[in-house]
Length: 440
Image (cartoon, rainbow, N blue to C red; front, side, top):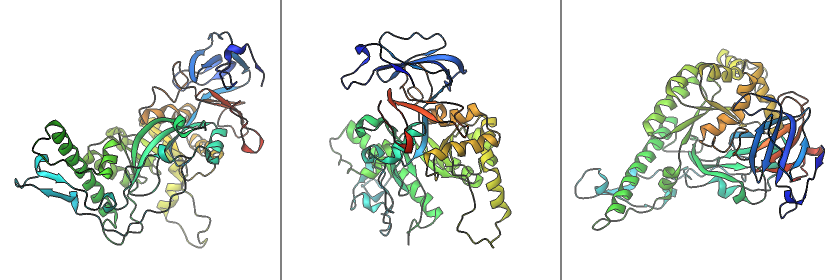
């Protein structure tokens, strides 16, 4: 691409330009109509202007975008990118007695009579690391982040992966450098798995894990009330003992609940309401069956782009059930059903290991009836909306973070190449072999 320097005014202390202008490009804003021959200006990490008549400021480095397409940076709505490998959390210790509390002389459960104590610490709550934050774990030099950025991803909502209460997610920009510079927002939610693998006692079943989660949220409500009462008038009251497991739960603005089959989606909608916290479902392999339920409940869904398929190592003589075959056939049609019903949804990488393959997985949903514009929003603006980040991410609008990628054709076409990626206004160019030359 032709990149013309218009003066030293456009350079920062590092020598990288602070102002870019991409001209004569097809701009897909995600929040409005496509601009067929437009200009987008990036200054100091933010989008300054976008439109067919946008002015190019003095000192901008200009890029001729004729024949190119500009899109908002893609967002992986539930990711593990950048996190170190995690071993399965030990689950050998039994759960602590519910609430682990002593009751005062009144004999009731009011906050004034519940004295919280840390009977051995949060490790008494099995499979619970609710206090962990992905922002504290991310490894900025992880090659997975570079590979994702080369494929057009500029943001990942990253969650710790292990445990019933796995930990708190963080929205991270994939610009590399220091971990602190990557954080867009943290925490954005608490990831729950309901996994019972490895348990030999409570909560060693689905019913047990649901009861366990319910109890933790009841404990958290009591803990919050007791802390508030003590803060308001501490004289004459024993202070509540600090419980980092409950602190982690209370810090999380929303929770993510697993739900792939329709029966699970219906169950988790009821359960999420019971917990009295904002919640999002993830999984969605039977989304086409559950569109009406999700619409009525007003609950968003994160859809795993690892579409159900036959295990390559499975016995070829084993005949799959009709239901299994039905799910494999119809899962890619789920997003179209949700879009038709007006349900908010976003995509996440799930079991798709190579970021470059994610676009192919999205293309399967488009081939099954999802509109191209809806697919783009599911990877950009709607992902940001689900996490309350659409005021800064997800679309090409003035004032938002300058996260975008530039291609030489339609983003879902098989032979389309990503020519450049901007993260926080810094320009990266994917090079041969999947490496980057940036920031350029």
